[in-house]
Length: 83
Image (cartoon, rainbow, N blue to C red; front, top):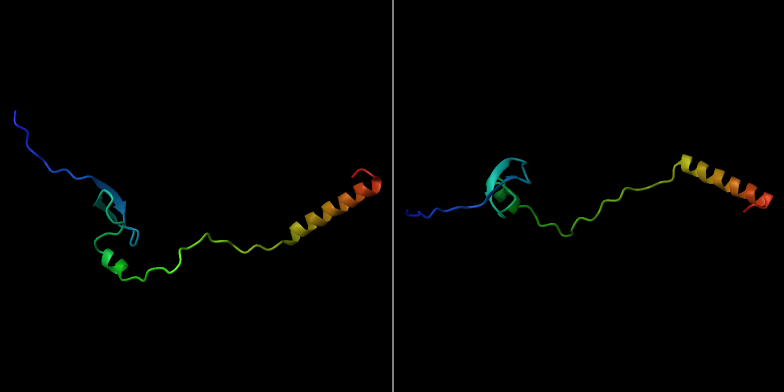
């Protein structure tokens, strides 16, 4: 038997990170489809890597009420001589 040489390529099903379309790419190739790659190449390079987003926090009145209740209980226990 004679073996014939075949060309094989690994491919992956991938979604374009710009438009969201599905396409097949060679393993390890780019993350954008052929239509979006030129568009993305024209975008400016970000100056700074985005960090973790933190939401502003503010104490609520409920949290303040709980803290004042705890303080009152501690004061009551100190008055009795437990704490």
